[in-house]
Length: 163
Image 1 (cartoon, helix red, strand yellow):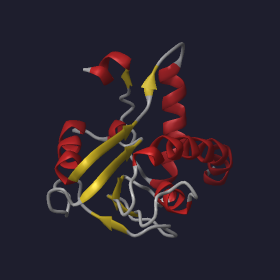
Image 2 (cartoon, helix red, strand yellow; image 1 turned 135 degrees about the vertical axis):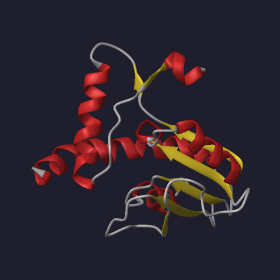
Image 3 (cartoon, rainbow, N blue to C red; image 1 turned 30 degrees about the vertical axis):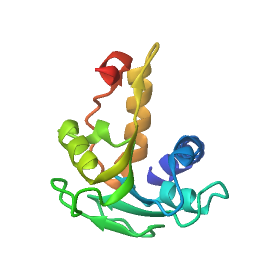
């Protein structure tokens, strides 16, 4: 089952990460330190640093709760409470498709703001349209079950994101 899920999810994941990359690159400056919270294997961070559009000297560090093999960037692991960094340790912090997994997303945002000197970039799922919760839940489950990442199935609509 895991091989089938990976085969189905892989093209969707690659397309999604390329889209996120295009949104993040304009916010980066030369020499920025970037923290990718909930980075998984570090695919996004590696793509950022490898992009010809990435400013010189940008470095990406990952922060994860779940250990994985074959990671693509330096990753620190933590228990999910206080991040192991001082205030303003990174110019940019990224939360890409992470908040919907958190039981206390506000607390995670507070920690990200604490360690971000300049920007906190948030990208997450948005309920919009017919069957969007079912579609997002299925994609969320299929992409995370194989890695033991819990799915809470709590997604925001436009109004919740703006509040």
